[in-house]
Picture 1 (spheres, rainbow, N blue to C red):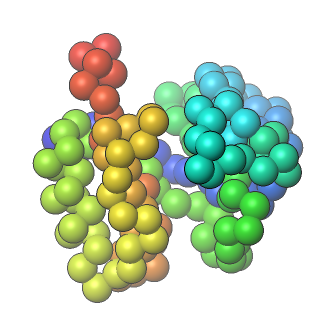
Picture 2 (cartoon, rainbow, N blue to C red):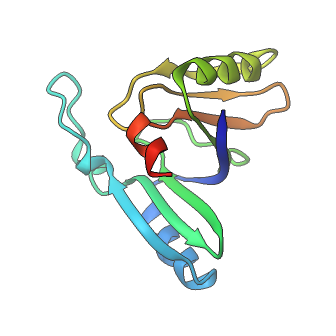
Length: 146
């Protein structure tokens, strides 16, 4: 089951500034901010110093709507036109695989579906219309919170 979709703004290292800007401009309530420095350390892939303060994920509430913000990781490409993506939250890994597969038809996989520390399955795909989707399976305990 699809649980919802949200606008997701991708910035190029100025995510902290974007959070403050949208908080003020849109009267947004900042629900959470995680930086790349907050990620669990992986000795095989250490987080470079220049990434530590970049936004991994910020969640803002604008009225009844959710707005997400993330920086690119240093060295990742950033193209004008790719600043806004759509995040789709899915209830099960099976449904995530189905949604991801369907969105991939005629499109381009950016990041294969894979387990992450925040999601049992997460991936990114640009569909046949050039829209980038972030497909995220919501952990079972989060589904039950409702």
